[in-house]
Length: 206
Length: 424
Image 1 (cartoon, each protein chain N blue to C red):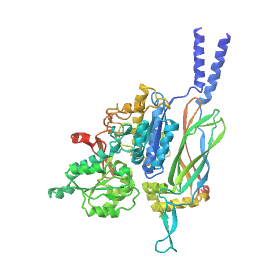
Image 2: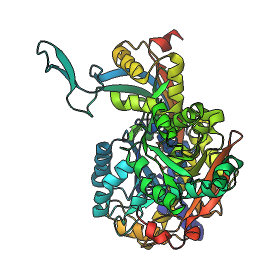
Image 3: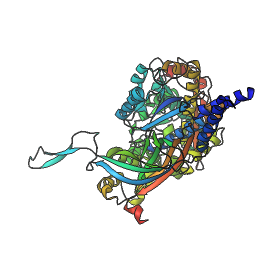
Image 4: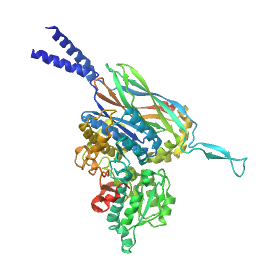
């Protein structure tokens, strides 16, 4: 056998072995590791300041200073992504819905590509921003949420205020739901997986 | 020797497969959606449908073999957020075309996308976006709001006012039917077709009462219903979204308003049926396509991908918005494929004029080339008219179910008026 044929045979065998593991790969597993409050403002729907009343300067009244500004809550979701395959896998994109107390309050997406080495675990932090006013608006329009809040005897602003006030204690369930992720192998094959998770004292009790 | 060449060929093929250079080309589409704002209840269903449809497209070879890469972001139904996302799409992500959501953001971004020569296909079917002389790069995929409003009123007039026993006495007494509009005055979506429906009322010889301002988040519309009742209306136009439409229909029923109801497409869905119950019987509404689960071509694929991509979302939570997403992205796929065939779309190289030209070749277009697919009336765009169709699909709630009342072709019915309605 000439040298050329030997090289070809080696290349063929090497490439077959290189491709083989990629042919039988499973999507990495995603689990919710924890939730953190990334940053928070005290709850307000619109910023107000107390100004003296016209009739009696010793008394004050609240005046809205800038409509459109509202309190912000940033929560961070730390996801544990485990690749048990013998080949590295790339996270292509990931999306999930966030629910507080069973109410959907946000859906976030991460498009940043991230390689997970073979047999290793990576962690991904996804930050979600919730503003008080739009969250109230969202709960007031979605029929499912309006009916649910009514059954609880709560109005949307009361619920949102409660979440702003109590999020640092995680006394209510914070849920990651309808999670969906797309991964890619080195040869471009797409793998999909779904995930969900709960966090908080309420979730721990269960 | 021949054997040797064969082995060499096979070896090179496998080496090529293993190489990182074996990467699929992509065409990037940016999508601005509402996942947290005032229209997020329907916006979420739309976003799910978009992802499922894009997966379907890519599973079937993408766009001329190139992958459709979707970047979908939430803007919370706030115009400044939409503008910021668009600039990111344009300057950093280098998208080929834009998918938009609301009337407010689509109309606000219209001067920018037209200056940038960026084709934008919107879920807002505002008639203001359909005149290519004013907004050449804007497209809507559903029959525009103004045509739908005119069609709903005409369909009610022909099928109910002229025929129904309920109005016999009034008809015979020579009474003119009276229209009252319920909508949020400050909402660009809700106010977009008001001028058109009042014009149609005049055309049909109807009277028009005072408009009632109803918030998109209204949980109580009794004062508006009582104010309207004083005018003895026969027909109410609901221009809002489902939640407030349901509230007004229920309040109208409780306060014995006595009028019939017609609804714009974003207020007419399975949730309306569920929430209004008995009060919803006989409510008429426009729809862009068939409802989720209806027996029409391609619905099987829509349902299969809903299960495949988002198996944890219950089927009963899915609605017409998923189906609309398939119509919209089926259209995007075909336009990009036509443009890409003419001149390959390369990331970072402007392709707007070619994509615009591709859209304007659509003649009786149907989703995925399937006749009757998804119940969408065929779409035609020309360089002088971006209204996708003159046909409105008019549905009615009967026995707790949404049923097709009629397909009404406004161009055929009002041939002398049709062109004069363009753009408003």
